[in-house]
Amino acid sequence: RETMAGVSSLGRVSAFLPRARASRSRATRRATGGARASASSAVGPSDDAAEYRVLAFEDSYDIRALLKNADVRMGHFEQRWSSENAVEVLREFGRVDVLLLDFYLPPVTGLTVLQQVNEAVLAGAIERPRHVVGMSSVSSCNNRLVAEGADAGFVKWDVGQWEGWARDRW
Image (cartoon, rainbow, N blue to C red; front, side):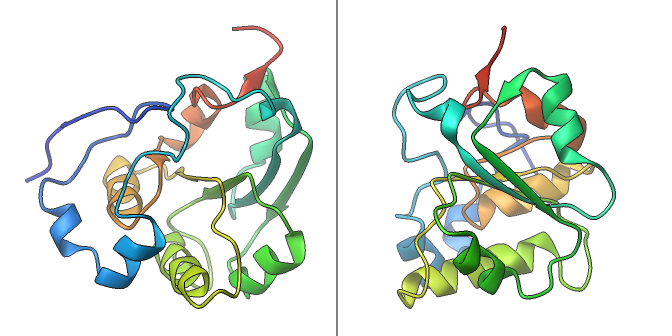
């Protein structure tokens, strides 16, 4: 049974799974530092949030438009409409400040992408994105992403409400 158990330091999380920490693999716990919350201890955006490099994996909605409508400022944004070769895409993208992951996208789910990212981080193939944010339209899917190491999870249309974004206005 899922229950609300907390709030991350950089935004609400749809819900925590009480046994999620125990169910995450040892490799995932090492890759994510064993933590669910963002590495940042500050509430609100960091000083460089307006320069964030954002990579989104979403197959149906224009995430840039959702973020723009929420007055989010960022340095660079790229959206991939499929999860094909996701780890290679991250490697080529370079520094990833915010990785946005939909759950249901082809050819593999956002959960599988996050597992692949965690494995690549452990292998030293890529750096872990500074922030990983799940953004499924199904909140229970965001819970699964958080259980696998995402820092936060939002229903897709609310992803612009994450407290880690720099904004033109609050």
